[in-house]
Length: 153
Image (cartoon, rainbow, N blue to C red; front, side, top):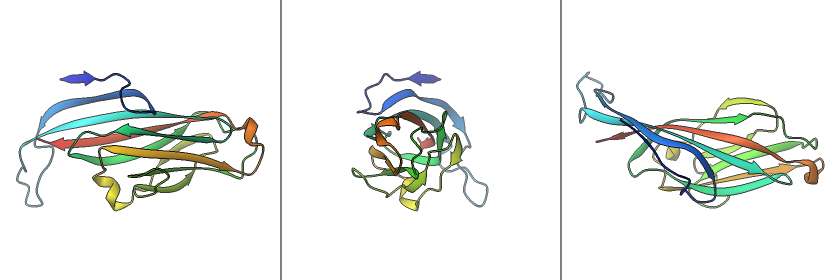
């Protein structure tokens, strides 16, 4: 079963959002027994469009989601020679409850370090991108956030 949802997730551009499942035995206890027996595996891609060195927005996580990974991708380096372009993720605007500042100015892929609260995020998640240094008017680009999660059913 695969379900895709439209871009009704707030101000973040949700490119992909859906579930793959059910998957029996995905979540197991330390003794090897199955907890609940069935889980749904979810995936979300949110594009943060950076204009003049900044971006902010929200997206929605399903109730009960347990985050496995947050990945950040900068497809093309942010121009305008910023000293840094920090990405943060939290439960409130400009918050860092889930991901503390990560410099995403360079082209590349980052497996973000998740603060423990980020494993069980609120339904509404806030992202902020802010550059410092360089020429802000030239610092346009994009950062892709990929969220891999599961839901126990």
